Length: 291
Image: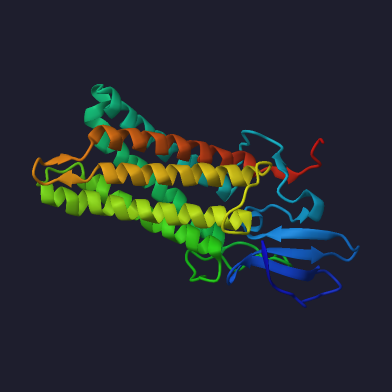
């Protein structure tokens, strides 16, 4: 984790002092703070938008959830998790049915399209979460907005790119239900699928880097790190699926329908686990680990 610059902002009455800013290039992902009592805390961009407090320095990346399955329909983060879980489940059922060759196979296209809609809904809620997050020091929230241009935030880029990817999945899963020529299948189904998979890869990696505060990092005691890892693995699996699904013009068939369905299933399961972990993350708190 590389230091970017030293901060000098200070309000001795209510705001802590910024001792150091840390992040990735021009993106600030962490602040080392010192409060009026001299305690040093680490603020992180992801924890801030999730409504979680800064962590004591010696407990950073050692968060444990208080509840494994919280029921909090009044929180945006809860709905994001639920919608992503439903979407991932629909992709898992659709691809699993196609792999087994059961009666579900004929309905896989509809399941994929429905799943993509849930993904898009959750992705947009994530964007709302980013653009309406509280100020790092004052904790005051800005006026509620449905959209803001905030390219200075790595979290904004992660959710924005993911939203674009889900919209492409909306397009390709809808077109996949139509009767198309091989060349149109590649143009209207495969191309959006491939670009959407690239968007998911980029978004997942940005989210992973934001949590690590560096481009590559390992934080096995941090539940946020695990959900980022599963989402990244899911994105890799979707990318492999996209490669396998390209239609060979000479035969009019996918390069490997079996591989495409298999890696879609693997990716969906990874996304399902990552989506579930959003729930306990909502209640995570830093705790002293047993030696």
